[in-house]
Image (cartoon, rainbow, N blue to C red; front, side, top):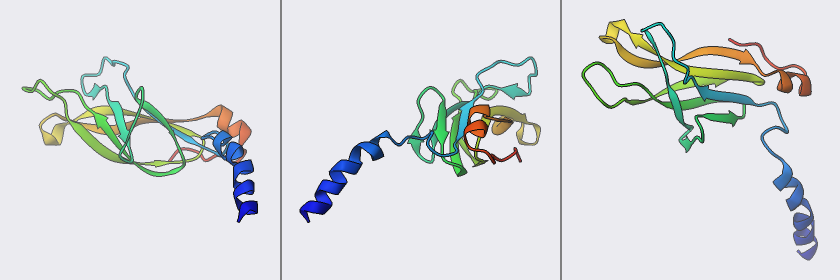
Length: 133
């Protein structure tokens, strides 16, 4: 039993040093940039898989993620909504989430993945990253 405890103590610093960049990762962020298109709006990522996000962006392991975003206020309201969407996060990809006015829903905002782009550093470090879908 003492030998097992000693081994765990020796490995603890290595586990602590392991971070999100030791394996292929994905990044999800909100698009805070304004656009001249009135049908496009900003979105702030607030949570991913139920966990709070700092500064509107997060580094995550590849896989399906539930992303909660704060949307702009709709016409006639002063407070925006918190809405979730699923994002299939591929390895070595950055996803930028924004808002789009949904004409079928009376112009209400809905979250969308505005663009997906490769993360060059990840692709270089872990050959075989995936292309956007």
